[in-house]
Length: 511
Image 1 (cartoon, rainbow, N blue to C red):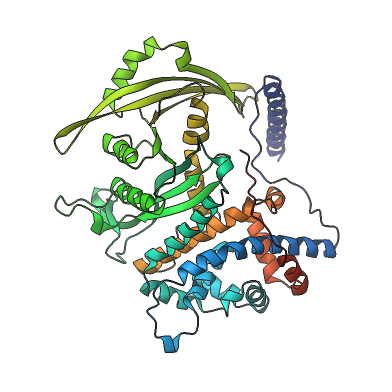
Image 2: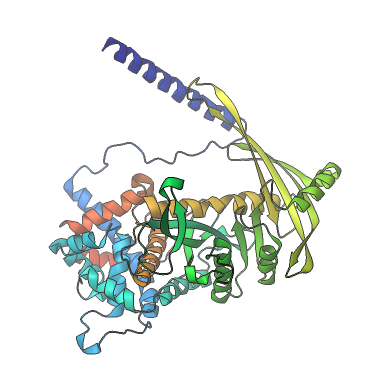
């Protein structure tokens, strides 16, 4: 016991020393003109509600603000969803198609984990009464299997059209104008696995061999290519999903569908959905190739693509030959956050490649960012210097004025789609849960989940709820609202009076 106590005292002393060292480092960075990284954690404090009346008022305000934003945007979604052909017998329909879609969206907005949980929770009298009061389009609360059977039969590819319609209305109203990069909408594209199984539920699933040679098994998995608006300030908006499909592969060469094939399909869909929208595409190290860059240029899009050391050796060779001749105006030093950055770039590199036996060429622009920053070593409580290097291919020539917005505000924010997918996987949206073994219904649930995530992001970044998100966190706010709806906190007359006031969606994101 004595040894354990001594060890605990040593650990506490080390933690205290590290906290003091980090505090001193932050003060030193501020004195040097650097901005220390903000704490991402929720504040550790007691509830500021002192009476039940104050808590009741706070809960009513939170629910009213969230519902007001949802009710302002849902008509656009429901109007488009109602246009989906309904294959059911009109004489036996109890729930309208749009009502069932709203039920599915609200399940993901409130982060219900499964169909069973939705049936159990949404049928509880208090939550049911509150939902029907706040969302009159619901009509009644259905059994979740009713929604599943509908998604299995309808054309689920029309569900994302409602999401695109909502985004087009937000773009027309210039809601994202403050967060553009050089007048362009940053669109990050990345792929991720949704789930894997050893049973082939449907033909479109991809397959691979897993296990060692003595125990090889065929695994079937689902892979999705996601596109998000990765706006400056960290706000990431779900935009579009492209499912990889075994049938979309090259059957002649016995090749499955792949992320690159899905990318070409996704680009065509994006171009049809937003034909005149100025876009800068943010891509990872899978995509630096002539055909990809030429495709982006043919659509009139800008791009910033991660370039790895072993990719495009021809470009690297010309870069190494020209980097020694750089002029002072082709270099730039700056501080960004708590990092010291050194940029240098080479414009107008000629890159040649072959397509179908024909040689083509295009000019690319390469930029290298070397940065350093200080952190406190948790073992020694001493500051240590960390270093990193980033390389991108740009569609537009770099200059001292454009290198910061293109690299720091656009290319570096490609992480936004990775964090957005992680939120959908680990923070309540059940990205990796299929909800149905049917391929069609599974895709329908995925599309409804992405719409719900979009609605929650708009609410959480709104001026009305920003302070509450800072206090509770994004997931904590959803839990707070769900608990409020599930208990007799709400006075319907007061809530209706709050909802009667017109509200304009005003996004607050650090630009």
